[in-house]
Image 1 (cartoon, rainbow, N blue to C red):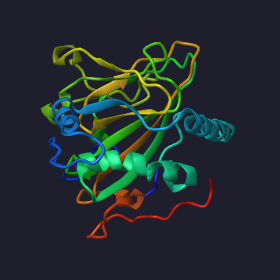
Image 2 (cartoon, rainbow, N blue to C red):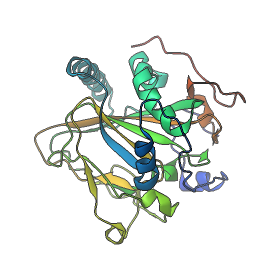
Image 3 (cartoon, one colour):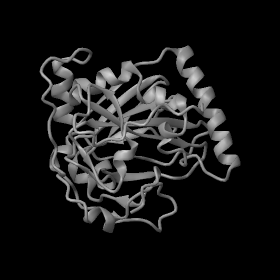
Image 4 (cartoon, rainbow, N blue to C red):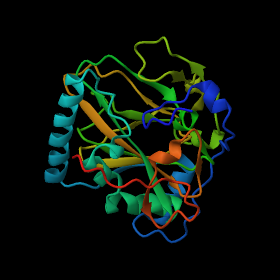
Length: 276
């Protein structure tokens, strides 16, 4: 079994992990930051968007940090999508994953005992030309049950012009959808594509200013077009789940206790890396 932090399971490997791929609505009754209306909206639509977290000076510092990290990644032969599971190797990304302002909103959706297990920069360079096909995150992850929530933090302003993310509202309530493998499609960042989207409703453009976040369910259909503009579009995805979720294929090694406790000790809870 491959337990490398950046290990991406194949469809065959995932098929051997027994998973509950149904949507489980949030049952939090007394949120501290979000409202009950927010939680009802998340349960209905599968997402929340447009929440300001970081002030202009804070996000500018995060952007400078990412610029340096990207430059080092490119120099080492990677690309703008290569910086994955970064909280295990970069202290400043660990700090973002565990930031109390982000965690407070996550726990308002999934409960107080929460694990942060994923951190991946999705950076579309100017004229990048690659789209992210319609997909469900849960298809890629050996987690059960499907209760994970993703925060998408805008490092740059994200607009229709530079290929912001798009959602299909309510699609998470359809459960796990059939996809086709698109591994040979060099214009697709990912290797899965869910088809027949036109029948499920119009896409919602997730335009965000730098420092704002959106949040979405792991079963929500989402994707983005190719960036044909002259502006970069970078976002940092931070992934969370309740401590009760089980991770197969060694993925429990990624999980940091960001709130409450992991009574079972299933998640490894690694310390903050020293490297910035």
